Length: 334
Length: 220
Image (spheres, rainbow over the protein chains, first blue to last red):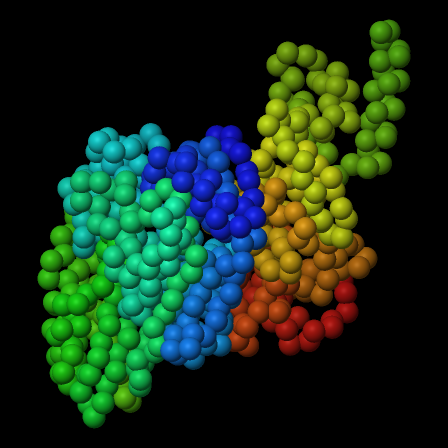
């Protein structure tokens, strides 16, 4: 690990001013905020991340979960994953989020990992993590070793010829299906970013993963009020029963009235270069009967543009079955 | 130095070392002896390595002052900012119950409690945990005064090589206060962050369940 200066932010303005001196907030940032450190310290030990300054934001007053007047929820940036997953309002109104978080990592890591940190969780692509291998995300222009290498766990949606790295987060997938909003404070003031616009596709610049700029501090995330009568769940398929990243996962938020689907929000995990919202699947579901045939059609639409690599062709069918099964579970006895 | 005085000094060192010998001092002596063996006679290697454990943690030129509270004791330290909580516990405080397995948050051998919650100490920077209550396996029980979970691990033979055990125990102690369901399957899920390569899982689950079903068993 390279040496760095460790500083503790006493307030958000100070943290933002200090971080704004970096030339990028993306891969290679010289200044990093640190929350739980579960991704960052790991990557610093591998020399994938080499920040010269760490700004500890854990003492900032961004650790609250509170109900909003409109019935929604606000979640502070440094709220721990375990506190979020077990919060009564989350379990009652946003089951998909609680289930997604509890399906990821381990109890120890969930006690450490923060809400903002999880939004910025980095890919588990082994070539990104190995500094002796080419990786366009870690070192732009060096090539993608995964496309011709071990790509079984990597993405089939949203890829480019430069990068096929999967977004590994479970929480993000649920947040996308819940249409969360990311609240950022930066040098030019505050702004709100719909989560669908927060993560960006790799394209020609896989080193850029989000819209964040130097100095941008995620302060909190808000969830809209739960859709009346909705049911939600997170279904995750993986190589072992626990403590493993998704090969495919589905976040389903669905409302069924008199046998008809009146509203559906669908997101997929483990298959996309970003947490993958499927409006194609939502369009196939809305207004239709909650039957397996409809679910299959929706799953087909969600994976229509899938581009499998040499080792992950199975993910196309796996993701379809995952979504169909998730829809069945979410709508049974509805 | 005459042969006689060297021999006397060595014997004094050895008897003194024997009295406070632990697996760690024994192993570190072996390691040091191995390093020095190629250049010097083994007999003097033993002498040179005695009482020099501080060579494991020379002060870094980048050291910063850090105050930690561990198992109720306060420690004023100067450590490199890169020092993880795990390395600080083991190399600076010589609390070697917490183990280094993967060093990347994947195995759980390094599990400790911070303010009563279990974490992977290998992914914590020690300097970020001032003013917090850190508890290691040494802090939950000692020989003769074992924590119920430690006693249950003994009673249920919940280990083989023992390397992951302190992490397993720290996770299990934390689990007692977590919203874990009563079934074995729930315990397995809650313990999935602690890997046991010997595969002692059935006995680990049995040990934990015995404590949950009978919170105050006899120690030992």
